[in-house]
Amino acid sequence: MRIAHINADPGVPVFGTKGSSLHVREVIEGFVRAGAEVHLFASRLGGKAAPGWESVPQHVLPGSENAPGSDPETAKLKANDALRHALENQRPFDLIYERYSLWSFAAVEYAREKAIPSILEVNAPLIEEQRTYRTLTDPARAEEVMRRVFAAATHILVVSDELAHYVAGYTADRGKIQVVPNAINPARFPANVQPVYARSPDSFTVGFVGSLRPWHGLGILVEAFAQFRRACAAARLLIVGDGPERETLTVQVQEHQLSEAVILTGSIPAAAVPGYLASLDLAVAPYPDLPNFYFSPLKVYEYMAAGRAVIASGIGQLKTLIVHGINGWQVQPGDANALAEAMLHLSRDAELRRRLGDAARKAILRNHTWDQVVQRIFAMAGFAGEVRALNLMIQQPG
Image (tube, rainbow, N blue to C red; front, side, top):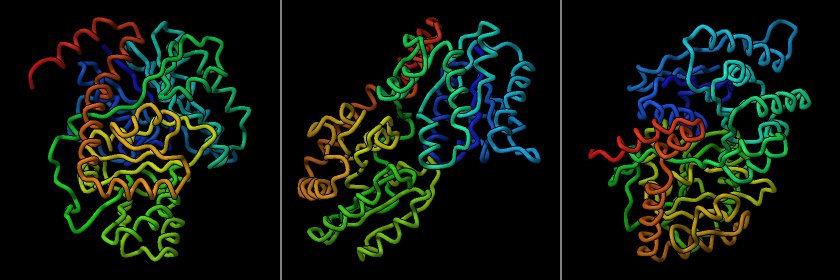
């Protein structure tokens, strides 16, 4: 089976360190493990491919640069011509799989014209994100493109129920929408990973792994940690990742006089994440009380796969993924006091942390792997034979 994987968003470099970049790679690698021939069409690679990618041809899409006198959005729309041309220059594909981006429509429309199944993967309401956190000069045109690709795609894969509700407001065919949450690759999270920072009875490490973005609640985390450390002098806070909130976060750490207790690592490669997670006694996802929580937080799936005791805000998909007191601990979104109390409670009970971490790992490995996601993608596209073949492969020893 030949699959064209489209990532036309220059803000998601395929070989970068973002969670979105990892998501692209994991889906492609899942296709490859299933025996598919995958061609990657991307606006930005952002680095060198890891070993094992030799079988994946990479087509870099030209034409998204600004022409003299044009605005960035017009330039990105123009890139559709290059994408269409790149697809037409290849032998026919059996499936077009595209990660939704603001200005790309050529791939799913090409698929519709050629009667090829297409799946549009929607990870966020990009228009709202762009308008709220970045710059969007022409939201009407962005909405026109969104409606266009939603209409052309054979199926729309969304990562959460909240996103399914959002997408349903822009397409007449709600039956094409399917919810497929994020997942992990078990090979990245073997048992007994060596920690980057040694754990000992003389220290207690709380941590966050992910991009430093406004919606991740890092200010809440620092406020809660400051309270917690007054009761646990051996506590340290490990914040792994980088992003636009780093400067604000650094100032907040200094204001709370926590500089000696907080480690900010900056950006790290995905391959290093398990070692940092192994350094944690508690892993935290301190989301604020967002009115539209549409995430399927990859970081939480990774926390759980690593066997960490997790404290997460009880919001959106996390309300069902985390079963309070069974495979993790829920707190009220945006409540620094509740988060500090949860940290203190779990810091005093090592057996509870072990039990939560073990249950979390089992739940993720049983229900949330990228190979399972690929099975669902193939089933959506109508490739039942490939699903059966993948099931047989997964069941083989080793």
